Length: 140
Figure 1 (cartoon, one colour):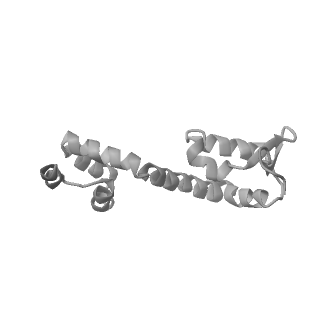
Figure 2: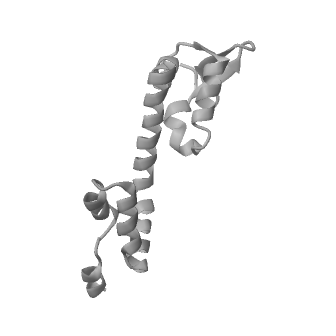
Figure 3: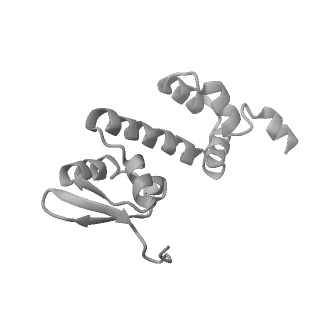
């Protein structure tokens, strides 16, 4: 077992990422694909077990949040903070549809910090009301 560790190019995903982070994605792919299959499996296992997927997903989602602020002037984290603190918020249905579209490809687990605790109620064809979701929680 000790000999296998000595032969490993990278001990885990953290060490791999330390060295390949500055490279372009295509270059990182070349490095990864040039590794022995056993080493690739070790890195993939480390990636999933050590929470790296969550880190990369959070970074990707944060870029979407920045784009929403810049392009559409929608700051859903500000809105969520306001709503969780007890205030309601009206949003146009078209803006809500943009939000749903932008996050439709992400798992609920990865976007819960954006939408968790919110209750959405259609108010009209043109607006939704965002309130705090109190289901299963004691009202304060």
